[in-house]
Image (cartoon, rainbow, N blue to C red; front, side):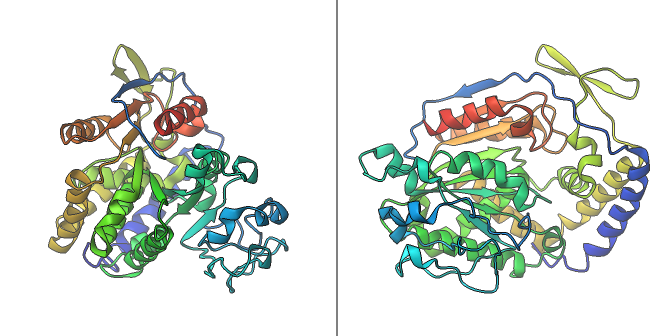
Amino acid sequence: MGSLSGIIQRPVIAAAVAAFASVSIDFSDKLQSVRSSDTCSTSEQSSTLLSNSVQDSKFSWVSHISVSKLANLSFVTRIRVPVPNVSFPVLDVSQNFVPSAFGSSVASSPFLVNLYRWHLPEPSTIDVSGSSDCSSEKSRTVVVLLGWLGSKQKHLNKYAEWYTSRGFHVITFTFPMAEILSYQVGGKTEQDIELLATHLADWLEEDGKNLVFHTFSNTGWLTYGAILEKFQKQDLSLMGRIRGCIVDSAPVAVPDPQVWASGFSAAFLKKHSVATKVHATSKESDMEVLVGRKTFMEPKPAIAESALLAVLEKFFDVILNLPMVNRRLSDVLNLLSSGQPSCPQLYIYSSADRVIPAGSVESFIEKQRRAGHEVRACNFVFTPHVDHFRNDPKLYTTQLSQFFR
Protein backbone atom coordinates (compact mmCIF):
# COMPACT_ATOMS: atom_id res chain seq x y z
CA MET A 1 0.00 0.00 0.00
CA GLY A 2 1.05 3.58 -0.35
CA SER A 3 1.91 5.84 2.50
CA LEU A 4 -1.15 6.06 4.71
CA SER A 5 0.52 7.82 7.62
CA GLY A 6 -1.14 11.17 8.11
CA ILE A 7 -3.74 10.43 5.42
CA ILE A 8 -5.45 7.83 7.54
CA GLN A 9 -4.87 8.80 11.14
CA ARG A 10 -6.77 12.05 11.60
CA PRO A 11 -10.11 11.35 9.87
CA VAL A 12 -10.38 7.76 11.06
CA ILE A 13 -9.40 8.43 14.66
CA ALA A 14 -11.63 11.50 14.83
CA ALA A 15 -14.58 9.55 13.48
CA ALA A 16 -13.85 6.67 15.82
CA VAL A 17 -13.66 8.88 18.90
CA ALA A 18 -16.90 10.65 18.02
CA ALA A 19 -18.68 7.42 17.27
CA PHE A 20 -17.45 5.67 20.37
CA ALA A 21 -18.66 8.53 22.55
CA SER A 22 -22.13 8.22 21.05
CA VAL A 23 -22.20 4.46 21.01
CA SER A 24 -21.15 4.25 24.65
CA ILE A 25 -24.41 6.03 25.45
CA ASP A 26 -26.54 3.91 23.15
CA PHE A 27 -25.14 0.59 24.28
CA SER A 28 -25.08 -0.91 27.75
CA ASP A 29 -21.96 -2.74 28.84
CA LYS A 30 -24.23 -5.49 29.99
CA LEU A 31 -25.20 -6.41 26.45
CA GLN A 32 -23.88 -9.85 25.58
CA SER A 33 -23.96 -11.94 22.46
CA VAL A 34 -26.70 -14.56 22.63
CA ARG A 35 -25.44 -17.98 21.78
CA SER A 36 -27.52 -19.84 19.28
CA SER A 37 -27.45 -23.45 18.20
CA ASP A 38 -25.15 -23.59 15.22
CA THR A 39 -25.32 -26.02 12.38
CA CYS A 40 -22.38 -26.92 10.23
CA SER A 41 -22.74 -27.56 6.57
CA THR A 42 -19.46 -29.01 5.39
CA SER A 43 -18.37 -29.69 1.89
CA GLU A 44 -15.02 -31.41 1.66
CA GLN A 45 -12.57 -33.45 -0.31
CA SER A 46 -10.30 -35.98 1.36
CA SER A 47 -7.17 -34.23 2.52
CA THR A 48 -3.95 -35.51 4.04
CA LEU A 49 -1.87 -33.35 6.33
CA LEU A 50 1.56 -34.40 7.63
CA SER A 51 1.08 -32.46 9.77
CA ASN A 52 -2.00 -9.22 24.78
CA SER A 53 -0.04 -7.07 23.25
CA VAL A 54 1.38 -9.50 25.86
CA GLN A 55 -1.10 -9.67 28.75
CA ASP A 56 1.47 -8.09 31.03
CA SER A 57 5.12 -7.90 30.07
CA LYS A 58 6.07 -8.32 33.72
CA PHE A 59 4.92 -11.92 33.90
CA SER A 60 6.62 -14.98 32.50
CA TRP A 61 4.55 -16.52 29.70
CA VAL A 62 5.94 -19.98 30.30
CA SER A 63 6.01 -20.05 34.07
CA HIS A 64 3.82 -23.15 34.00
CA ILE A 65 6.42 -25.17 32.07
CA SER A 66 8.69 -27.44 34.03
CA VAL A 67 12.31 -26.85 33.04
CA SER A 68 13.37 -30.19 34.49
CA LYS A 69 10.98 -32.01 32.15
CA LEU A 70 11.88 -30.03 29.06
CA ALA A 71 15.61 -30.22 29.66
CA ASN A 72 15.53 -33.99 29.26
CA LEU A 73 13.88 -33.89 25.84
CA SER A 74 16.15 -34.39 22.86
CA PHE A 75 14.23 -32.02 20.60
CA VAL A 76 14.86 -29.07 22.91
CA THR A 77 18.52 -28.81 21.96
CA ARG A 78 17.50 -28.10 18.37
CA ILE A 79 14.81 -25.48 18.96
CA ARG A 80 15.52 -22.04 17.57
CA VAL A 81 13.06 -20.09 19.67
CA PRO A 82 13.07 -17.10 22.00
CA VAL A 83 12.59 -18.83 25.36
CA PRO A 84 12.36 -16.65 28.48
CA ASN A 85 13.98 -17.59 31.76
CA VAL A 86 11.39 -19.74 33.50
CA SER A 87 13.18 -19.60 36.85
CA PHE A 88 11.77 -16.18 37.67
CA PRO A 89 8.21 -14.78 37.64
CA VAL A 90 9.38 -11.46 36.20
CA LEU A 91 10.05 -11.22 32.48
CA ASP A 92 12.80 -8.79 31.57
CA VAL A 93 12.15 -8.01 27.92
CA SER A 94 15.35 -6.06 27.52
CA GLN A 95 17.54 -9.17 27.30
CA ASN A 96 17.87 -12.35 25.36
CA PHE A 97 16.41 -15.41 27.04
CA VAL A 98 18.37 -18.63 26.93
CA PRO A 99 17.79 -20.85 29.97
CA SER A 100 21.02 -22.61 30.89
CA ALA A 101 19.06 -25.81 31.42
CA PHE A 102 18.39 -25.93 27.66
CA GLY A 103 22.08 -25.87 26.76
CA SER A 104 24.07 -23.50 24.60
CA SER A 105 22.73 -24.96 21.35
CA VAL A 106 19.41 -23.14 21.80
CA ALA A 107 19.56 -20.04 19.61
CA SER A 108 19.75 -16.76 21.46
CA SER A 109 16.92 -14.55 20.27
CA PRO A 110 15.08 -11.61 21.83
CA PHE A 111 11.57 -12.09 23.15
CA LEU A 112 9.64 -9.73 20.89
CA VAL A 113 6.80 -8.34 22.97
CA ASN A 114 5.10 -6.26 20.26
CA LEU A 115 5.41 -8.82 17.47
CA TYR A 116 4.89 -12.43 18.38
CA ARG A 117 5.06 -15.01 21.12
CA TRP A 118 6.36 -18.52 20.83
CA HIS A 119 4.35 -21.15 22.73
CA LEU A 120 6.04 -24.48 23.47
CA PRO A 121 4.12 -27.75 23.22
CA GLU A 122 2.90 -29.15 26.50
CA PRO A 123 5.53 -31.55 27.90
CA SER A 124 2.93 -34.30 28.41
CA THR A 125 2.22 -34.36 24.66
CA ILE A 126 5.81 -35.10 23.64
CA ASP A 127 6.97 -38.66 23.02
CA VAL A 128 10.44 -38.65 24.59
CA SER A 129 11.23 -42.15 23.25
CA GLY A 130 10.61 -41.03 19.67
CA SER A 131 8.54 -44.13 18.94
CA SER A 132 5.43 -42.21 17.86
CA ASP A 133 5.56 -40.86 14.30
CA CYS A 134 2.57 -38.64 14.97
CA SER A 135 4.12 -37.04 18.06
CA SER A 136 7.41 -36.57 16.23
CA GLU A 137 5.67 -34.89 13.30
CA LYS A 138 3.82 -32.48 15.59
CA SER A 139 7.03 -31.57 17.45
CA ARG A 140 8.51 -30.53 14.10
CA THR A 141 5.50 -28.38 13.15
CA VAL A 142 4.83 -24.75 14.00
CA VAL A 143 1.27 -23.44 13.81
CA VAL A 144 1.38 -19.71 13.01
CA LEU A 145 -1.66 -17.82 14.32
CA LEU A 146 -2.12 -14.48 12.53
CA GLY A 147 -4.53 -12.22 14.42
CA TRP A 148 -7.41 -10.07 13.23
CA LEU A 149 -7.55 -6.26 13.17
CA GLY A 150 -7.48 -4.99 16.75
CA SER A 151 -6.64 -8.39 18.27
CA LYS A 152 -4.12 -8.73 21.07
CA GLN A 153 -1.96 -11.59 22.21
CA LYS A 154 -4.43 -12.48 24.96
CA HIS A 155 -7.16 -13.03 22.35
CA LEU A 156 -5.10 -15.73 20.63
CA ASN A 157 -4.16 -17.59 23.82
CA LYS A 158 -7.11 -20.00 23.74
CA TYR A 159 -6.22 -21.03 20.19
CA ALA A 160 -2.56 -21.44 21.11
CA GLU A 161 -3.47 -23.54 24.13
CA TRP A 162 -5.54 -25.90 21.98
CA TYR A 163 -2.60 -26.48 19.64
CA THR A 164 0.10 -26.78 22.31
CA SER A 165 -2.06 -29.27 24.23
CA ARG A 166 -1.81 -31.46 21.14
CA GLY A 167 1.96 -31.26 20.81
CA PHE A 168 2.42 -28.41 18.32
CA HIS A 169 4.70 -25.40 18.57
CA VAL A 170 2.72 -22.17 18.13
CA ILE A 171 3.60 -18.62 17.17
CA THR A 172 0.98 -15.91 17.80
CA PHE A 173 1.36 -12.70 15.81
CA THR A 174 -0.67 -9.49 16.11
CA PHE A 175 -0.34 -5.87 15.00
CA PRO A 176 -0.98 -2.94 17.37
CA MET A 177 -3.85 -0.88 15.97
CA ALA A 178 -1.63 2.22 15.84
CA GLU A 179 0.78 0.36 13.57
CA ILE A 180 -1.99 -0.45 11.10
CA LEU A 181 -3.21 3.16 11.10
CA SER A 182 0.28 4.50 10.31
CA TYR A 183 1.02 1.96 7.57
CA GLN A 184 3.62 2.85 4.96
CA VAL A 185 5.12 0.78 2.17
CA GLY A 186 8.45 -0.47 3.50
CA GLY A 187 7.58 0.90 6.94
CA LYS A 188 7.43 -0.76 10.34
CA THR A 189 4.48 -3.01 9.52
CA GLU A 190 6.23 -4.61 6.56
CA GLN A 191 9.48 -4.79 8.49
CA ASP A 192 7.69 -6.69 11.25
CA ILE A 193 6.24 -9.15 8.72
CA GLU A 194 9.67 -9.61 7.16
CA LEU A 195 11.17 -10.28 10.60
CA LEU A 196 8.52 -12.94 11.26
CA ALA A 197 9.04 -14.49 7.82
CA THR A 198 12.80 -14.63 8.44
CA HIS A 199 12.23 -16.25 11.83
CA LEU A 200 9.99 -18.89 10.23
CA ALA A 201 12.55 -19.51 7.49
CA ASP A 202 15.18 -20.08 10.19
CA TRP A 203 12.92 -22.70 11.78
CA LEU A 204 12.64 -24.46 8.41
CA GLU A 205 16.42 -24.67 7.95
CA GLU A 206 16.40 -28.13 9.48
CA ASP A 207 14.96 -30.91 7.29
CA GLY A 208 11.58 -32.24 8.35
CA LYS A 209 10.33 -29.00 9.91
CA ASN A 210 6.96 -27.70 8.67
CA LEU A 211 4.49 -24.84 9.02
CA VAL A 212 0.71 -24.60 9.30
CA PHE A 213 -0.94 -21.18 9.09
CA HIS A 214 -4.15 -20.29 10.93
CA THR A 215 -5.37 -16.83 9.91
CA PHE A 216 -8.15 -14.64 11.31
CA SER A 217 -10.24 -12.18 9.30
CA ASN A 218 -8.87 -10.36 6.27
CA THR A 219 -6.03 -8.80 8.31
CA GLY A 220 -4.57 -12.19 9.25
CA TRP A 221 -5.19 -13.53 5.76
CA LEU A 222 -3.43 -10.58 4.08
CA THR A 223 -0.53 -10.98 6.52
CA TYR A 224 -0.31 -14.60 5.38
CA GLY A 225 -0.14 -13.37 1.79
CA ALA A 226 2.68 -10.97 2.65
CA ILE A 227 4.62 -13.83 4.30
CA LEU A 228 4.14 -15.96 1.17
CA GLU A 229 5.62 -13.08 -0.84
CA LYS A 230 8.70 -13.05 1.40
CA PHE A 231 9.07 -16.82 1.07
CA GLN A 232 8.86 -16.65 -2.72
CA LYS A 233 11.55 -14.00 -2.88
CA GLN A 234 13.81 -15.68 -0.34
CA ASP A 235 13.50 -19.36 -1.31
CA LEU A 236 10.71 -20.96 -3.32
CA SER A 237 11.26 -24.29 -1.56
CA LEU A 238 9.86 -22.73 1.64
CA MET A 239 6.40 -22.77 0.05
CA GLY A 240 6.54 -26.56 -0.05
CA ARG A 241 7.09 -26.70 3.71
CA ILE A 242 3.64 -25.23 4.36
CA ARG A 243 1.44 -28.24 5.17
CA GLY A 244 -1.92 -26.53 5.66
CA CYS A 245 -3.82 -23.28 5.94
CA ILE A 246 -6.87 -22.57 8.13
CA VAL A 247 -8.79 -19.40 7.27
CA ASP A 248 -11.15 -18.15 10.00
CA SER A 249 -13.69 -15.45 9.03
CA ALA A 250 -12.17 -14.62 5.63
CA PRO A 251 -11.54 -13.88 2.83
CA VAL A 252 -12.82 -11.10 0.67
CA ALA A 253 -10.37 -11.25 -2.22
CA VAL A 254 -11.01 -7.74 -3.58
CA PRO A 255 -10.28 -4.28 -2.07
CA ASP A 256 -13.88 -3.71 -0.91
CA PRO A 257 -14.44 -0.37 0.94
CA GLN A 258 -17.50 -1.75 2.74
CA VAL A 259 -15.53 -4.70 4.14
CA TRP A 260 -12.67 -2.47 5.27
CA ALA A 261 -15.13 -0.03 6.86
CA SER A 262 -16.89 -2.86 8.72
CA GLY A 263 -13.57 -4.28 9.91
CA PHE A 264 -12.27 -0.97 11.24
CA SER A 265 -15.63 -0.12 12.81
CA ALA A 266 -15.70 -3.46 14.64
CA ALA A 267 -12.09 -2.98 15.77
CA PHE A 268 -12.78 0.53 17.08
CA LEU A 269 -16.07 -0.24 18.82
CA LYS A 270 -15.23 -3.78 19.99
CA LYS A 271 -18.10 -5.23 22.06
CA HIS A 272 -20.24 -2.17 21.27
CA SER A 273 -20.26 -3.08 17.58
CA VAL A 274 -23.21 -4.88 16.07
CA ALA A 275 -20.65 -7.16 14.39
CA THR A 276 -20.12 -8.90 17.73
CA LYS A 277 -23.79 -9.72 18.27
CA VAL A 278 -26.31 -12.15 16.88
CA HIS A 279 -29.87 -12.02 18.17
CA ALA A 280 -31.92 -15.18 18.24
CA THR A 281 -35.17 -13.44 19.14
CA SER A 282 -37.17 -10.93 17.16
CA LYS A 283 -37.23 -7.24 17.94
CA GLU A 284 -38.85 -4.43 16.04
CA SER A 285 -35.47 -3.01 15.09
CA ASP A 286 -34.10 -6.36 13.93
CA MET A 287 -34.08 -7.69 10.41
CA GLU A 288 -35.14 -11.23 9.63
CA VAL A 289 -32.61 -13.11 7.53
CA LEU A 290 -33.15 -16.43 5.80
CA VAL A 291 -30.19 -18.83 5.91
CA GLY A 292 -30.95 -22.05 4.11
CA ARG A 293 -34.21 -23.18 5.69
CA LYS A 294 -33.68 -21.32 8.94
CA THR A 295 -34.19 -17.72 9.95
CA PHE A 296 -32.51 -15.58 12.56
CA MET A 297 -32.96 -12.01 13.66
CA GLU A 298 -30.10 -9.79 12.58
CA PRO A 299 -29.61 -6.70 14.80
CA LYS A 300 -29.30 -3.31 13.18
CA PRO A 301 -26.40 -1.01 14.11
CA ALA A 302 -27.05 1.98 16.35
CA ILE A 303 -27.25 5.40 14.71
CA ALA A 304 -23.72 6.32 15.78
CA GLU A 305 -22.29 3.09 14.38
CA SER A 306 -24.17 3.58 11.11
CA ALA A 307 -22.67 7.05 10.84
CA LEU A 308 -19.19 5.72 11.50
CA LEU A 309 -19.64 2.99 8.88
CA ALA A 310 -20.77 5.56 6.31
CA VAL A 311 -17.76 7.80 6.99
CA LEU A 312 -15.30 4.90 6.88
CA GLU A 313 -16.79 3.46 3.71
CA LYS A 314 -16.39 6.75 1.85
CA PHE A 315 -12.91 7.13 3.28
CA PHE A 316 -11.76 3.68 2.13
CA ASP A 317 -13.43 4.20 -1.22
CA VAL A 318 -10.79 6.89 -1.77
CA ILE A 319 -7.87 5.18 -0.02
CA LEU A 320 -8.22 1.79 -1.71
CA ASN A 321 -8.27 3.41 -5.12
CA LEU A 322 -5.01 5.29 -4.64
CA PRO A 323 -2.61 3.81 -7.22
CA MET A 324 0.11 2.74 -4.76
CA VAL A 325 -2.39 1.28 -2.31
CA ASN A 326 -4.36 -0.53 -4.98
CA ARG A 327 -1.23 -1.94 -6.60
CA ARG A 328 0.19 -3.23 -3.29
CA LEU A 329 -3.09 -4.83 -2.28
CA SER A 330 -3.58 -6.34 -5.72
CA ASP A 331 -0.15 -8.00 -5.58
CA VAL A 332 -0.96 -9.75 -2.31
CA LEU A 333 -4.51 -10.66 -3.31
CA ASN A 334 -3.38 -12.10 -6.64
CA LEU A 335 -0.84 -14.29 -4.86
CA LEU A 336 -3.46 -15.52 -2.40
CA SER A 337 -5.93 -16.19 -5.20
CA SER A 338 -3.67 -17.98 -7.66
CA GLY A 339 -0.30 -18.66 -6.01
CA GLN A 340 -1.00 -20.42 -2.74
CA PRO A 341 1.07 -23.50 -1.85
CA SER A 342 -0.43 -26.85 -2.80
CA CYS A 343 -1.54 -27.76 0.72
CA PRO A 344 -5.00 -28.51 2.12
CA GLN A 345 -7.14 -25.53 3.13
CA LEU A 346 -9.91 -25.19 5.73
CA TYR A 347 -12.36 -22.27 5.68
CA ILE A 348 -14.41 -21.45 8.78
CA TYR A 349 -17.04 -18.76 8.29
CA SER A 350 -20.63 -17.78 9.11
CA SER A 351 -23.69 -16.49 7.31
CA ALA A 352 -24.18 -14.14 10.28
CA ASP A 353 -20.76 -12.47 9.87
CA ARG A 354 -21.32 -8.71 9.58
CA VAL A 355 -17.76 -8.01 8.40
CA ILE A 356 -16.95 -10.75 5.88
CA PRO A 357 -19.91 -11.76 3.65
CA ALA A 358 -20.41 -15.53 3.50
CA GLY A 359 -20.95 -15.28 -0.25
CA SER A 360 -17.44 -13.89 -0.74
CA VAL A 361 -15.93 -16.79 1.22
CA GLU A 362 -17.94 -19.39 -0.70
CA SER A 363 -17.00 -17.83 -4.03
CA PHE A 364 -13.30 -17.96 -3.13
CA ILE A 365 -13.62 -21.56 -1.96
CA GLU A 366 -15.05 -22.59 -5.32
CA LYS A 367 -12.20 -20.88 -7.16
CA GLN A 368 -9.65 -22.69 -5.01
CA ARG A 369 -11.31 -26.02 -5.72
CA ARG A 370 -11.34 -25.32 -9.45
CA ALA A 371 -7.63 -24.56 -9.17
CA GLY A 372 -7.09 -28.07 -7.82
CA HIS A 373 -6.66 -27.35 -4.10
CA GLU A 374 -8.00 -29.71 -1.45
CA VAL A 375 -10.55 -27.65 0.46
CA ARG A 376 -12.76 -28.19 3.48
CA ALA A 377 -15.34 -25.63 4.58
CA CYS A 378 -17.68 -25.14 7.52
CA ASN A 379 -20.44 -22.54 7.74
CA PHE A 380 -21.28 -21.91 11.41
CA VAL A 381 -24.40 -20.04 10.23
CA PHE A 382 -25.22 -17.99 13.36
CA THR A 383 -21.88 -17.00 14.92
CA PRO A 384 -20.40 -13.47 14.72
CA HIS A 385 -17.13 -12.44 13.09
CA VAL A 386 -14.05 -14.32 14.49
CA ASP A 387 -16.23 -15.58 17.33
CA HIS A 388 -16.89 -19.14 16.16
CA PHE A 389 -14.59 -20.85 18.68
CA ARG A 390 -16.18 -19.09 21.67
CA ASN A 391 -19.74 -19.71 20.50
CA ASP A 392 -19.32 -23.35 19.51
CA PRO A 393 -16.00 -24.74 20.77
CA LYS A 394 -17.01 -28.36 20.15
CA LEU A 395 -17.78 -27.83 16.48
CA TYR A 396 -14.75 -25.58 16.01
CA THR A 397 -12.25 -28.02 17.51
CA THR A 398 -13.89 -30.93 15.68
CA GLN A 399 -13.26 -29.14 12.39
CA LEU A 400 -9.61 -28.55 13.32
CA SER A 401 -9.12 -32.13 14.47
CA GLN A 402 -10.62 -33.58 11.32
CA PHE A 403 -8.51 -31.28 9.19
CA PHE A 404 -5.27 -32.36 10.86
CA ARG A 405 -6.28 -35.98 10.83
